Amino acid sequence: MPPRDLSIPGLTPPIRRAAAAAAALAGCAAPAAAQSDPEAVRRLERQLREFDMQYRVSISPDQPISERLLVDYGGSLRFGFYTIDDAESKSHILYQYDARAYLRLELDGAHRIFIRGKGQYDNWERGDSFDGRGSRWNNPGLDRAFYQFDLRGLERAQTGVAPDYNFNAKIGKQYIVWGSGLTLSNTMWAGLLDAEYGTLGFTALGGVTAPRDVIDFDGSRPGFDSFVRRVYAGFQFEYRGLTEHRPYAFFLAQLDSNRDSQKFQNVAGLFPTTFGYDSYYLGLGSKGDLSAEWTYRAEFIKQFGVTFSNSFDAATALPVNQTRNAIDAYAGLLGLTYLFRDPGDTRLDFELVGGSGDSDRLSANDTFGGNAPGTTDRAFNSLGYVNTGIALAADVSNLLSFRGGISTTPFRQTQGVLGGLRTGIDGFLFTKIDRNAPLSIATTPGEQFLGGEIDLFLDWRLTSDLNATLRYGVFLPNTDAFPRALDNPRHFLYLGVTYAF
Image (tube, rainbow, N blue to C red; front, top):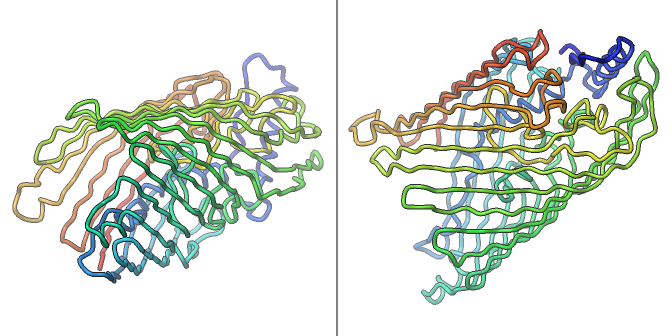
């Protein structure tokens, strides 16, 4: 991928050249895979998450059992075809083969063990992989493995009465979504404890990211796409005494345990760079019903902490001493859903999501090319995930995204194969929060409106065991907001078939 266009009106030619030279240094951010494009790898990870959701669901925590011991096992086979445009609108072709097998044990409605293995092979067309490593197995092995204890389930099984208190513990490798998912939405080895007494709920989390299953937000760090170790601890209070509303408040700490150092080699010299990003998140939110038809979700997050600064001066492209800078950032989400309550389960969805940016960064996410020394870092960064389109797939940092969509099952009452067909469309509008701050994708400084996107989906349950899926998205850019080589429409297409047994 070509260096970013950092030409800013008003800068003198020497400064423009220095800034461009600094941007070119980012190409050395991953020496172990010289052809790797960190921006594209991070965006690809966000794009592919949409198609892994079906595998996140394992056990309904309230599922009753008719016998003391329930043993369940099975698996699935999935074939997926992707065509994915990069920042220059060049298509990359991927054939993905996925096989999973699981075992679930449940005793007395209280003790649950779930184990699932994964074998996934990514077969790229020659020269199409974003990380430069070509076709390969995608971290095969243990996908999920956890033990869960539910005290209320045990009391119900032994006495037939569900008490107004509960203690639920889930320990092992699992997918954690914290709050709305803005701060944390990823695979972890973790302990998740939920206690409830009357109308009050308390949740505690402690764990570490599954190192080889996570793509880091800092694409300049060595091993950002192969080994990520970030430790998390947090707690959340929730009031559960209201029928229509569920307000909550949380604290989440993220401690960077990677602690990598690297010297970037460039014709201009050596740029020693130390990595470290410790962040803390305070959140307030609520979800619930506004009426019989309207539901909502809202969350506001304040981020603080410390990070290492950039290792070169953005104006001169010369090495500088790094400093430990304070983080002061924010993010928020507001969503509304209208349920038609018709036979087709038709719904309208609206969502507004955004996060703060930092104008003295060259990259919204990275340490190398990141926050200027001696300044406060105002860019929001986390290992969270929310839907910002499958074609653009930008991180929330400095992004304001509005989504509106409709989905329905039009032939649900029809006898035959069409009854299992669900379809929908989403429309997005994107803008920068700070017109001079960068995004996780390359843009032109000074231009605020980025463009729009249209995403279409079709999920078709052909039989009880066979499902077909189509996803298509196209991002239509505001050409003034992107460098000339990056201002064409970007497409994303996925066709998949899943057989479950």
